[in-house]
Length: 305
Image 1 (cartoon, one colour):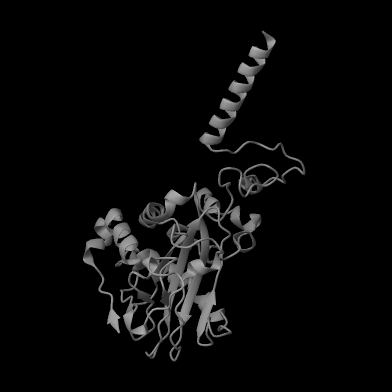
Image 2 (tube, rainbow, N blue to C red):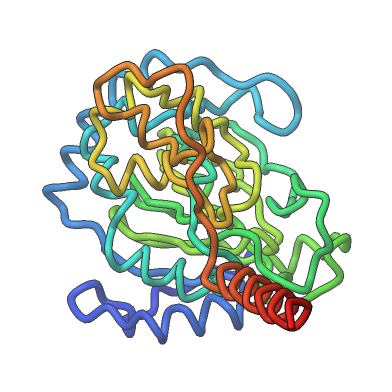
């Protein structure tokens, strides 16, 4: 199997958002080597260690009996709350898919530990969870953080270059897959339309990774964010993290609570049973209403003459 070489033009000390975004949109994936600060990575791993120990092995052909997973990572790790808003990552995601929505939302956080003997995962495209038309837009960007060195032997993520431009229902030859070889602390970006899978772990040790996935703000996320982070949990989040997990409205008025931004539930006070419904519209909607009322006033004035 061919391996993906980590490209030094994406060195984290001089992160080129445009270059990485262009690579992501051209190939369906891109790697930023050693993007995460080693101190931050060590804190993250220390916070996640007990959860990996406690996590259960999967059930079924897709999740795999030799692989552990757990979600709701932002309530299990304070460091993850900073990483999910990593400035370079957010710039890439917004550049790649921001044109199709008013704001982004968190699709999921998922920690993955592939144990020795785990077979290769079946190839799939994450966008298949949504029933909308494929090919006209991108729905999501995944960011796989390497908590260990990713190698072809220990189950590095496999990807099919250019598969985001192929028939979205097409399964491509296994020989065309490349393995996302990258050092610990690197970030693998890949689109929801990119065919990919977890690799087989033929090594003697488990391999750990952490996916932070971002999607268009008007989609239903894979992980139910409001159950993962109910108000009593999200109240402790920084405001930008709370907004990312869904405590904000996607204009116009999508995801509201009693006609208001759901961030009202994070104030610490009990929200009243009845709240005044408050406009949350885009500028173009206000313009259309002004045109209507201006026209209505003109017609009324004409009728009065």
